[in-house]
Picture 1 (cartoon, rainbow, N blue to C red):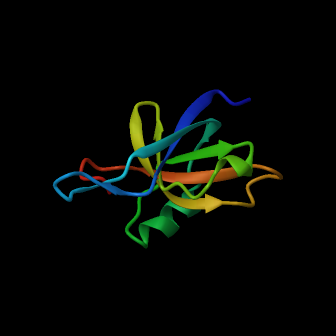
Picture 2: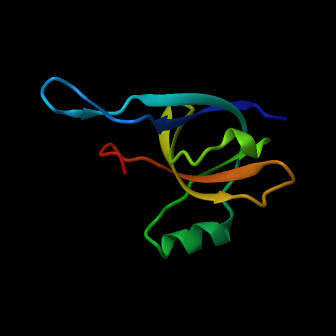
Picture 3: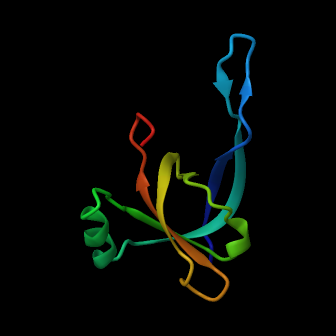
Amino acid sequence: MYDGVATLISYGEPTFDKYGNKHAEPIRKKVFVQPRGVYQSEFYNAAQLGLSPSLTLYMTYKGDYDGQKVLEYEGKEWTVIRVDWTAQRDGISLICQERSKNGN
């Protein structure tokens, strides 16, 4: 059962305004997800790289994911730090950490 909705965020080709500032509009795609915990081994392996995963979202269809590195879920922004393509037959798991206010 997929009881959550996440919004995958990517960015289109940048454009320039009349002052020469570069802007890229976000492209948002809603997908159904099932929240899961982060395995202890996943947490410790990521910690060695300075990462702190705190959320795993399972998506039923691999085709919905196109390399997005940012997503919104339950009112927060998350960074995708790893994708488990072998999670289940047609699905994938996105291992995420909460984004800080400076965007990392």
